[in-house]
Amino acid sequence: MKTKLLVSAIAAAALSACGGGSDTQSSAPQAPITPTTRIAGTAAVGAALPNATVQAKCANGSGTATTAADGTFTISIPNATRPCVLSVVTPDGTTLHSIVDAGAGTAAVANITPLTELVTASIAGGSTAAFFDSFDAQAQAKLTTDGVSTALDAVKLILTGTVDLAGLDPLKDTLVAAHGDTPGNALDQRLDTLGAALKSSQTSISDLSAAVAANTGSAGGVQTILQPAAASCASFRSGNVQKVDLTTNTAQRFTVDAVNLTRTNVTTGAVEQFQPNATEACRIGNTNARLMVSKSGITLERRAGAPSLVIPEQTIPLSELAGDWVALGYERPDGGGMLSPGMIKFTVDGAGKFTGAADCNLSGCVPWPAGDLPAISVNTNGGFTVTDSTGTARAFAFKGVDGQMAVVILHANGFMIAKRPTPRSLPAVGSTNSYWDAVINGAGLIPDPTNLTTDSVTVTAVDTTANTYTRKRTSDGRIDTWQNNKPSDGLRYRAASTGAKETIGMNLPNTGLSISVSVNPADNFYDISVDRP
Image (cartoon, rainbow, N blue to C red):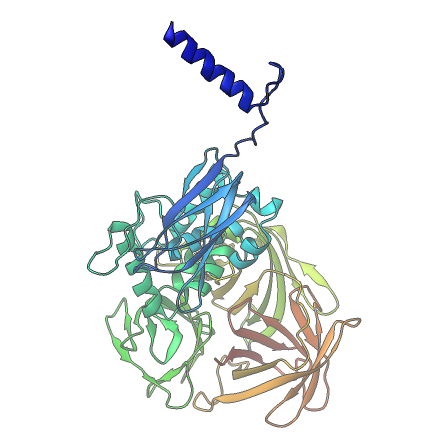
């Protein structure tokens, strides 16, 4: 009885405290619970990146976190929608990026390292900084599971022979970064390997990222810049090269040791020792030969006799030669005689067959007979073999870090150098260029191989309507004007003027090499220029 009264009293007190009221009163509504996405990982460059700010942007939502002493971090983003992109700045000011795919779930792993920067670059197909800054619908659409997997496979291919990523996922695998007395795990050791390769090749992670972003198809163009470089010339790198003697139909294979400045003939075993020039970077030589190394690594070699191009050896599938080409050649008539310049256009199919070709000049083109169209096949000694009814020729392709290619074709009656007919753009007023110059005469020789011409030019005017630009040469003040994309896309034309001969020119894409040939038969020359660093 006492118990019942006590319960009744408590109930009455409760009603009194509430002020009584109807039994239909409802409780206050509660705020909806929003899911929080947590992105965890490790930021490292071989060593951990401690106390670094990590930023994340998602399709919906963003957040930041500060790394711990071991480089680990966790970013919590309420109501986030994947995919996401991340960034962190290293102590030297380099920004690295990483990605989270568009999969479901509120927990994700995303390490941020030089390796994830390369995967991000492969996904972005352009600047990773721009990819992060915009992160618009177009960027987000690339971050599918398949898209990320394809990018990861591309990076593994590019790093073959430099960093072994077999069985590893640098984005999601556990990364223990070296810090204090704690050594790094296997993934962290791969970062050390990449860092050592970048140092020995004098290549920055930013340059490598840009190269990966531009790479399509075969990886040769990117792999070339990861080889050890000479102390005096970052573009003179170790590896196999093809020395192509342009006017004697000779190609020789060498192995270069750029660190020690030696070159070994693969066939004979003969070793050449070179020395750096005391005042000019990337000018390397000895008693017999003078090497002018372009920014791409293609080298112009001058010595007594025929001039040569030394081309870093790359493995490029035959299918990548498919498409249109424009070339400037220096060839003898079939019956012999002096070399003379010409312009050639040709088209190759995916199997290496020429489907069309023509000899061209300022007035037009004359197609080759169908029976004269050659076919290209892979040569086991490097490069390709070009075969037609008259015999065979050798061809060597070189892919730059931007994925563009140049091809040198060498045959019994001369040579030609080809590029894609991509339209040229006008330079900016005030832009300058310093270069070494070599002029080959009709006999196929550089008249004085010991006399090396060094000069520079400055763009003084641009006419966008006429598609022309005017330059001034430093050595003598000569003025000349060039018209872009004449007589073909990818070429340029200069009319004769005081001190300047009528010329057709071609810049090989992103190589640092330019070709100029005479138009007037009375001024017979083939000029190769190498941009100085």
